[in-house]
Image 1 (cartoon, helix red, strand yellow):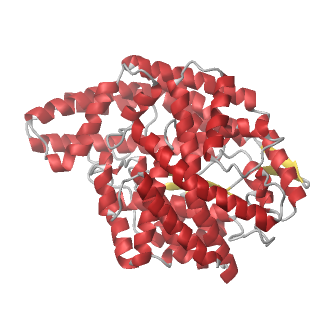
Image 2: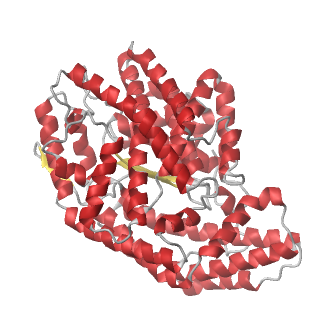
Length: 570
């Protein structure tokens, strides 16, 4: 795929973000521009969009470099410089520009069909903006970065090796229960060493977030975030309906799967270290050797489905926009970071050689395809898809891509096992999403809680949604702090329910794909190409599915996955 940075028409071609003083003149021009027609207004929007793209891509690279090597003080300082010395100056200018846009639109109305979604978001930004929150957001960004640094330093020593926690988790698939138990305790105890540090960090985050909310006139941070995230298409009550649907439909199914696992392993009790091992004692699936092998097999996998998908990954490989291997000093997790100006995103992950890494690559690959499909949209704002749509792209790709998994050199039985793991994971995701989301609702509607009260709330919610068949006797303290491993809670609060909504959409998308592969792919790409130019419900409808989390719909999709699992296991 031929890709190059577009020629700029507003920001100087050779301009690089270094200081606020050098960036400020572009914002001044936008605030002073005369707008005397609809054509003027649209040209002004394109200028603003170009500036946003330049700035956001600069921040993106600072973040990427920092997460790739958290021990590098130079890249950490470059990121923090942006957060502390540039970003706070941009916020008030954005408020001025938003108001200028709304005022101009009253005189020179933009086409409603094209700009409705964008304009409603701008109006909401104006509504919640408060000057006094700018330094608080700066402090929150700085504190959130500490979470990644703490996790990046977590390693254990086993069998003469220093292992990241991602690498150590591979041993939880070992057929020898003694090895699994040993590694479980090594990992859990290493996390527990940071319990006080992480609790103290989170206390600071909660207090600051509550202050942000009250400054903006909200009763709590949950309600503020629903506004800040632009959740126009559902409410907190709808999230509660999702929790209820998952509890009634999916939790019993997962409990049944756990009982089946216990019987097949011939165990008197099922312990937390028994959940990833193959129940037939077969060796761990090893679909690739290292990040380079994972990349090449991922490209071949995508080529088996759609040449365009493969071209996206190939382009990223050529641009060196992939960092896949787990290593000491690297931040935890995985992401696809859009690069607004060049259009080719960056995939970051912590591959350790297991089936979950394959699933992560195709998940992030779905995000990447989404980035490529929207890269030529007229405004940067049109590309900024809400997470409910972004995660639909990635989670659908996890399921659709199974058609190409033979590229990972599985034999027939290994492929069957890989499919079972993926389908189990597609439903197992839902109770965990409900757990994390309900926990965050509790946290921020009880902003004065103590760490002890928070732990009690977590355990109660955890027990509500997670497999009651798993025996945590003797491991209660590890269960009580299990939320510490979920980076979203620390770094991107309330960004989690989207995974649940999108997982339901992905199952529906895959169901349609299995019925008609050509039409299914057409619908998938058509939905993604819309970016955020339409409301969420319309985007889902374009994909041939529903934005629906009712009990009946969750039951329908659960039963479809259950049937597909039965076919694989019999």
